[in-house]
Length: 409
Ligand code: HGY
Ligand code: MN
Ligand code: MN
Image 1 (cartoon, rainbow, N blue to C red):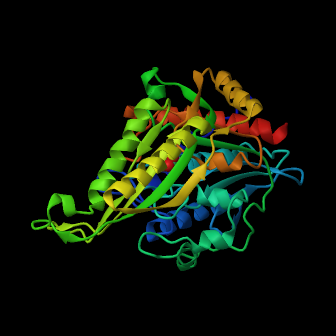
Image 2: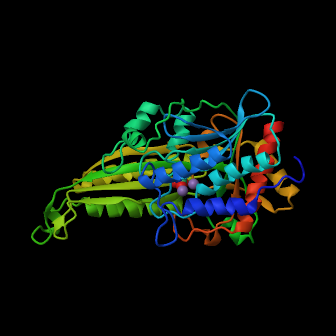
Image 3: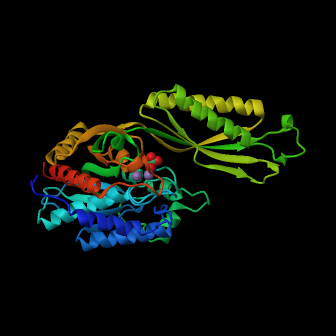
């Protein structure tokens, strides 16, 4: 790589700050749920930035935004990317940093008057968070051929609003076929979203892969009855059943190595103080670095639910919201990220990702790797999410170096 090639740190930080103003929350974070007006504003801003940079901007049928810097030769491109949608209590960095860093890499090459051998691109993928529509990483999943456009458009949010209708409403149902740009390699920069790098005194993460993910939606049906007059033995209480299931899932994390469990959504109907609930809809987010114990956890949970249903007279049904296997990245590209960090004299260590990322999908298409920067306090999906300017610049320089290497190899 041209040894004096660097990103413009001030421009990186100012673009991130500008994007974080869109959907800014009073707590200092961001709320840009997929395909909402705030997401549209962020998309419009990003398209404007890409156009001002002279990138060829294309939108595909699932709303993925692609900015392309033409190379010297036709053929597969080196793609960088991430997402600009957030969870409800999002921070300023999750996803946005990876997209802004990709834009900055292409801007730095433009400033240096460098044209890569291969095309290079940055993609902002639709609905990575899966907070509004399921599954998560939906835009990259469709891009990678894991889900059809029609099936993705048919997804609905918890209010029954359709994904396709929302894409059209905000003007981001593009003409391009997802995956239209063949990938030679994919690199993603992201905040770690956990405490590991900070606890080791900082430095960067060369991400070796992503753990397996299983998202389930359980619908529990009992019998609504009076909370004051119905003897306890007569109740068919799905609220109590949901609590037992949540505790059982938590117990699994103590017996199955590496197992994680979270119930982030619990909706109770009719939701009145004095009514034993009729229905509870709850989510379970199960993860494990290895597929076999993850499958063991899910099987144990389903068995527990079947026994609970039988004993307590509650009907329990399951719906898959997301199911992605543990995903290893590509050794050659991981080593390239490490080499780039070494070029800048930056400490870096190998680690897997606890969070899902679009890279999990892109690894189905091409060699893939990620670079992490520390999350202060290990916080994410929280308005207080924070990473330092220095770490952002360090990570973006490593992204530039590794992407440039891949684009000219
Ligand atoms: O859930 C995840 O791991 C990611 O934030 N979508
Ligand atoms: Mn993310
Ligand atoms: Mn996230």
